[in-house]
Amino acid sequence: MSIDIVIEPRMRDLGGFSVGRVLPFAKRRTVGPFIFFDEMGPAEFAPGTGIDVRPHPHIGLATVTYLFDGELRHRDSLGFDQVIRPGDVNWMIAGRGIVHSERTDDAPRKNGQTMHGIQSWFALPEADEETEPEFHHHPKSSLPVIEKPGLSMRLIAGAAFGETSPAKTFSPMFYLGVEAETGADIPLPDDYEERAIYVLAGAVDVDAQRHDRGSMIVFKPGAAPMIAAAEASKLMLLGGASLGERHIWWNLVSSSKERIEKAKADWTSSAAQNFDGTVFTLPPDETEHIPLPTD
Image (tube, rainbow, N blue to C red; front, side, top):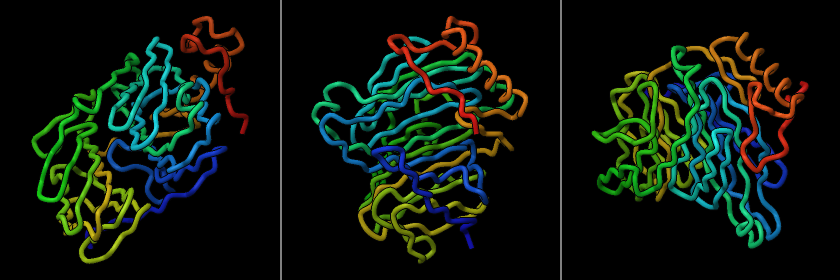
């Protein structure tokens, strides 16, 4: 058997749109550096409605929101203000600490829109957890596209099949958005310790066993599965080197529980002092924030 585990998303209603939580999972916390993997939507937002994720902190990770439909505006405490659209990569490295928000802009809020995407978090190696925060925008046109018979694969991050994404990574990894025609053979990069496929649309046959939309298929190390598109499909291929155990509390990630406790105290202290630069600061043009959870 080449499959280690199959994970089905646990659905969450976040007030107007649905999220399928895939990682972390009780029996499989990570795949390579991927420690968090959510599918947002697809959700229809009526005119006058949208997403308002108020400013909140991160430490110890890098994040990307990869969209298939819709758009969002990112603002962060480094001063970056960037709209993300389908196929683009907003690559945010939290490191020792960053604050950001994600909101629907005025035009799509007025007109309504379909929203669909994947939000992923990537653990940083212990030596890089306290790196300086950074933000990089990579438009769709800058990402390598790998063509194989019946397949088109866009390299979001990392390296695969002789190509390298411009996104700055800290450990060996790959992250590919794939469109496959019916019957197409789907390759996996074979030089990574941990690998998985997430089925966004359609279905795949893995060693002659069908897996439908909403399945993350995690493979055993060194496996050589036979994978084919059972129908026209959209997939995410992901994986990389294992980085070991990480603690996750709210939006905070670290190899150290004590570091998470410090970040919690820092967020509370910064809020009490109106984000005057003590530790965390708000993005420009933002005046509210998400308080530290109490449970």
